[in-house]
Length: 110
Image 1 (tube, helix red, strand yellow):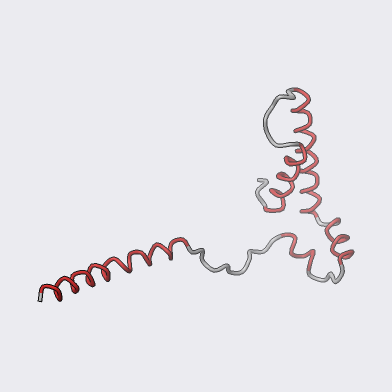
Image 2: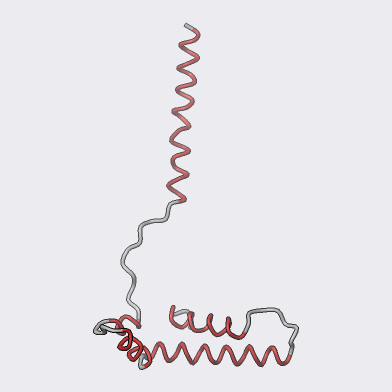
């Protein structure tokens, strides 16, 4: 009889803590991705059918032009900073340009 109670106690213990471990897995999972929010570059891809058309449309897009200008500005600023202090630690001029370019495209330039 004591064996039955011991087995039941172990089973109850296992069942009571089993769901607690399952909750941890759900917290780590990312929610499914929904629709992307609209972006100013969406119009670039509406009517194009070839790579050349995409390139031509991008070159004339205001957001793309703004991103290119920001990248060039960041690169020049970083080069000037490195001329003044060559021992400074930080991103290279190319990396600074890339970050500025992507920030504008992501809408984080404000």
